[in-house]
Structure formats: structure tokens, C-alpha cells
Image 1: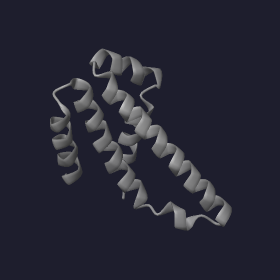
Image 2: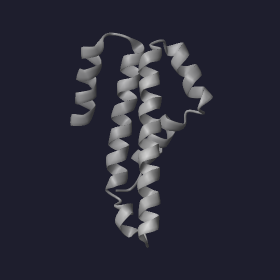
Image 3: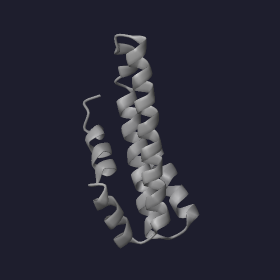
Length: 105
């Protein structure tokens, strides 16, 4: 709940644009989902250093893609442009984050 409130205050601080509220809301969901996935502690369960390195690289890449997706959402400002952008990516980030929230952790 603190995460959601933090991003809500940040959205209010940055201005009353739909893109800001949608972007910061998506960011709050992604951060919450990331914390839930981190509780699975997959990194320590991998069998070798090579797999742990690959896991680290994929986690870094996923984070960079999520940040780019969210910042693009914030900069687009208009709901119609955001929906066009999200649909061009098949709503992958919002749906993926929402699915991660359903993990039984």
C-alpha cells in the first residue's frame, strides 16, 4: 500500500495529465509485482553460476524494458496515444505485471 501511495503522490506532484496517472499507476503495479517475484528467490535456486549470470542479465533487461515502457507511457500524455502504444506491444507489461501479482507468494 505504501508503494501505491508513493506513486500516487508522485503523480500528483508531476501534474494532472492522464499519461502521468496511467504511467505512475503502471509503475506502482510493476514495482509491487517485482517485489513479489523477488520473494520467490529464484536466483539462489539456479544450479550453476552460468544460469545465475543469465538470470541476472535477463532481470536487468526486463527492468530496462519496463522502465522504457513506463516512461514512454508518461511522455505520451494522451489516453488514446497510450492505448495505441500499449496495443502495439500487445499490453505485455501491464498484463505480465498483473499476472505476477497473482503468484502465490
